[in-house]
Image (cartoon, rainbow, N blue to C red; front, side):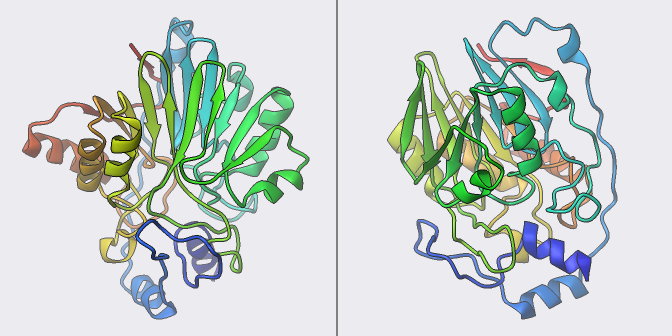
Length: 320
């Protein structure tokens, strides 16, 4: 019973109630019949705890860099600005502390160990991307912190008395210091409960500097949105792209890319270098924990590509 409940909350749009749809004019909508078929045929994945690095403790963090915390959470330092994407530090991707998908690995850097954070970006309101307990703590630790969120999610923050929150529709942007943040369309959906389907928006974040651009895709199925993003904003130098939570693909592919589709996103964006995310932290679907990076490596070899990295949480990647 609880397994079905959390599956619905985190991964599966069963009934569309809200106003928001994808750029193709469609809302992702799965039937109860599809859910039952998926549950009846679901295989049990082989779980593993991936390695975590302490490299960040002994590195020069004054230079521009990024560190994977886990799942879709990255610390990104750009000159004097430090950004945190989709911060999830709780033990479960769930509205409850003792139920729901549990972390396979701890965050590579704890909330208390983080540097001063200036900007938080949120891609959408699923519990594995919008962790309100972590966001409340971050706001307490960083009183001047600015939260950039999708349109429709402001009440989640107001209920926790979190300040400095700005909502965005697709293609809305904001300039913070010398950086421009633009909210871009991806193919997905939103919900925090059983009766608020698609009542808020979802998307990726494109961050432009005077030196280079960065794109964080959040969570997405494959679509033409990435070609539109590249045509509108230019190719990013760095792209953070999900590679996990796709099995069974007949059921998940509309809203979650597999590793091969992640490569297509990289090529559509014409990104110089990409980083895989959205794997290895929570067990959300039926693929084995280590399958996404293995499939990605094989697909890259078959395509003679080398510019899509599989990261270790806690290692420091310098952004030149």
